Image 1: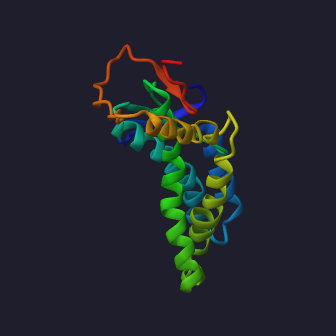
Image 2: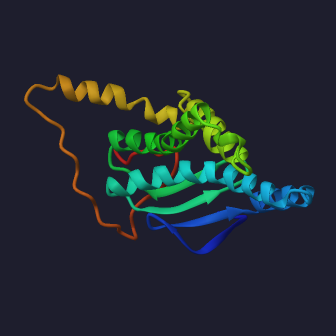
Length: 198
C-alpha cells in the first residue's frame, strides 16, 4: 500500500504494522499545538491510534486463531486495515469481522465501568484514555456493526443465519477446520473480507 511506513521490529500476531503519512502528520500537528501540555497530547494521540490499533489487532488475532495468517496491519488517520490470507468460508469471514469489535469492547467496557464507579477519569493523564479507549471506542464499535458492506457489520451479522442453519441440520454438527499453514501463493484480502467460496 502506498503512503505507509513500516514500523520495523513491530509484529502483532505475526503481522507487520504500517503507519500512514497522514497519521504521522496529525500526530506532529497535535504535538506542535500542545506545547503547554506535551505529555497530555502524547497520551491523547496514543489513545486515539490505540483505539484503531486494538480493532485491527482483534481481527488479526481471530484470523490467526482460525488458521488465516495476518500479513499486515495498516493504521491511517481515520481508519485501519488488517490484511489476512482470505478465509475459506463465510462463517470464518463473519467470525473474523466480530474480532475487531470484540477487542474494542473488551477494553472499552471495563474502562467505562471503572470511570462510572471510581474517580479514574479525574486522575491526571487518564481522562483522554478513558474518553478515547472507553466511551468513543465503544461508540465506534457499535457504529462499525451497522449492516453496511463498508463496515464490519456487513459481514459480522451474517454469522447469525449461518449458526441457525447449522442448528437446523439434523445429526450434523459443524466442526472447525484445522488451522492451515501459510502458503505464499495464498490469496490475500483486506477487510471486510470476502471468502473464496461463494
